[in-house]
Structures are given as structure tokens and as C-alpha cells.
Amino acid sequence: MAGEVKYLLRSVLLGASLTASSTVSGLNATHSIDTRIRKVYRARGRNTEWVRYDVSGGATSIDTVFVGNHNFSKTATVLWQGSVTATFSNAPTLNVTMVVATDSLGTVIPKLAAFLSAATTYPHFRLFVSDEANADQKVEVGYVAAGLATTPTRVPRQGFRRRVIDPSVGQMTAGNQAYWKIRQQYEEITYSVVDLQESDQDEILGIYHAVGVHTPLVFALDPDDRPHHNTFYCQFMNPLGMTHRLLRNMNMDAVTLRELV
Image (tube, rainbow, N blue to C red; front, side, top):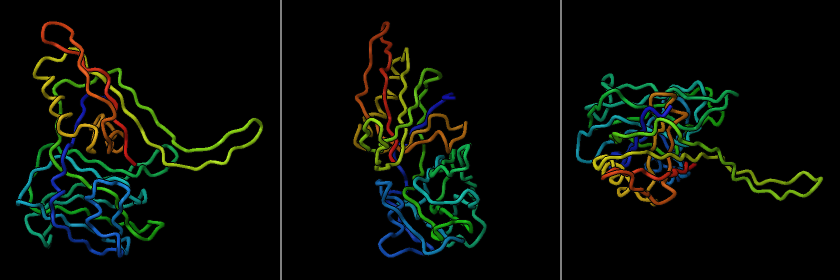
């Protein structure tokens, strides 16, 4: 793992005009580009539902797509599409299948990620979902992002750490079973990089300056190895530190990114 990492700092969809196949009152399509991932868009049905994004400023390049906080079943058909026409009347030139991933128990992992082999440019994008097995009978999406990801030259090849955190709250007493308020689990990823030359330092500093601890981003710990499992919608949780090593080279102190769910 961790042969490389990717950061998607800004989604090109943020300024887009949106159209949806259907929508539930109060849970409209614009919620899918709201950076608060718990604020959802919900369709009225579960088959052939879609949200179209007409990108501000015309044709725009992307190589990364992220869909977070969805309610798709594991058999859902999920497509990320690109077209030169807003009607999508012809077969979309870009048609990426996003497979719904599960854990070893068969539980759906409520996020999808796709990393294209090369950047592709379109004025119109669309998330298309057909999900006959959806138990809710309504397609729901919390956050959709697309854009060009940044890959630092120097990446953590070993020594990173992942922690799964359960923030559930309960009061335990000796000999008694506690009552718990169940909260959704999330992950924290911590890594550091050694021996950064000045150009490497500039890359990671540029990433941190762009988002700080206040702006969410999409982070892929390893985009080539099970991207749905290893990609996170998250925020930096601590200052970015550099420790002098030799000449002008620096070691990047351990940095932590916390998943937002």
C-alpha cells in the first residue's frame, strides 16, 4: 500500500448548475455539492436516477471522482459520465463504472472513488444510478466531487498509520452492561515523509496552505489498491511541521487527516 497518495483539493462541481431526474422536497440536487457531507440529495425513486452537473466556465478537466455518504445497495449500477451535450442524448463519451464496495461481512462501504488513467475534459458531467435492490427505495447521496488531483513527488511508502475510531458514547459500570449512544465510525490516517528536498517541501506546503485545517478535501492513501476502501473525505487535524535534516532537506513531521462521515 501507499505507493502514492493523491489530494483532490477543489471540486470543479462547486460552481456548477445542477439538474436532477427527480428530487424529494427539501433534499435537492445542490446538496450533493454542499461540503457538509451529512447534507444529502435524495431522489424520489431508485431506478435510472441521475444528477447532471453543467460546469461553470465550460469544458473542464478531471481525473478523479468521489461520491460520499450514499445509500446504494451492493448491486447498484453507478456510472460517472461526461458529455459535450447537456441532454446526454447520445451515448456519453465518458462512461466510468463505479463499483459499490463492501467489507468482508458484505456491508456496503458508503463511498465510491474513481481515478482515471488520464485527464478528460467535458462541459457536462452526470452521476447515474440504477438500484433495484435499494431497501430505502430512494437513491441518496451526501457529497460528490470531481477534479484534478495533486500527487506529491515524495510519498509515504511505509510507516503510515490508520486508526478506526468509534465515537459512540456510553457509561460503563462494574458488572453492568452500558447503554450506548451509537455514532458512526470514522478513520484517521497519519503519515510522515523523510528527506524532502526544497521542491518537495514546496509541494506539501502548497497543499496545506490551500486547505489548512478548515477546508475538507479528498485524500487517497493508495488510489491503485481498492480505491473505495482507501479514499477519504477528510480534513487536516494538526499543524504541518518540518524538521531540518541535512543541508536544505527536511523531514515532514507526522500529519493526521480525519475522515468526515
